[in-house]
Image (tube, rainbow, N blue to C red; front, top):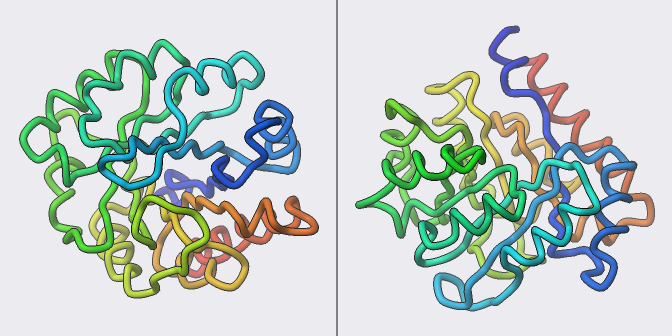
Length: 230
């Protein structure tokens, strides 16, 4: 039971699906409805074709919320963003393995030095073995984000074949925070939860729901039920 407790369920509505004109009130609403984290999609228009938000938006939002800001940096040069995001008040800083193969050790250390929690993400085409050294390092990442869609745009279809990566990670690292992002909602959560994911990013399935609080609750219950079974 200790391992399951170490990897507690965390539901992270993706603010990319929120009303950006009312970001502060949307954040407050999500927390009130039971969100553990707020997932912030940072895209540079280069690593992925879309362009979204940067440190100034994180800094503005931080003035209105104490919530954990789970920042996923889909950017080509993540090390260029560490200082600004640390100052802005980001809680988690998740970078992509595909662009950090040569400098991840230094990157993890700089993220921690700025008071943020380091995480690594991998695209659907990237082998899960590529992140093992980062989890096992002397100064390790504390979260692995398995993309269940190609990063860059919201509203894509969940890729169930990515669950093999989640299963592999959970078997190897029982207490690791394993996050999934892309196409997660009531119809796909059980597959992800039973594979071992405990951090669930959900965008359109939460913000597009008639009762977002009920969806957040259902996602959490699925993770918790799978952990009990596991």
